[in-house]
Length: 147
Image 1 (cartoon, rainbow, N blue to C red):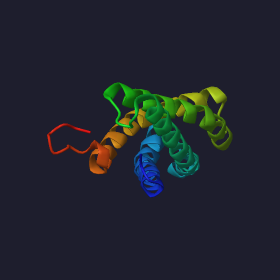
Image 2 (image 1 turned 45 degrees about the vertical axis):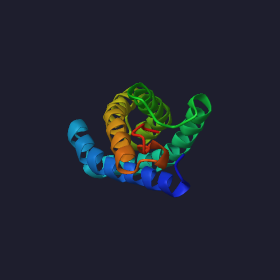
Image 3 (image 1 turned 90 degrees about the vertical axis):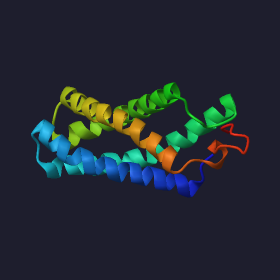
Image 4 (image 1 turned 30 degrees about the vertical axis):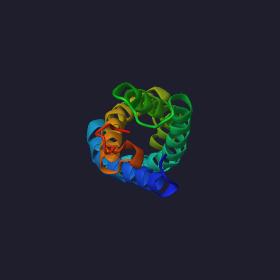
């Protein structure tokens, strides 16, 4: 499993890159001031960073118990990203409605849009992260069999 420092690097890099992408895109897509989207983005990223750490730690523990390892197939990666974003959607919707002064329905639509973006982003980011920082047990063994 990943170390605490690796999990912290993962969570922070995920949120910083995501925030740099979503703030201008969200301001453009919803016709709102970039500063307002930025505040929502920073608050959301802060909440999401904690959720990211806890969620990935829990997910890896469940995988370790169920499969004996943490290597994720394509299907498990899709499930991983969807469950992460679903939990975050529930947590962030009231915050978005309150701060932007929009209805819960509008906040839901905005949150779903952000979640769809982050669903794809999380899948791509986590796949890339695992390729850039693979765990030792994922390396090819001397006989050519992947661990």
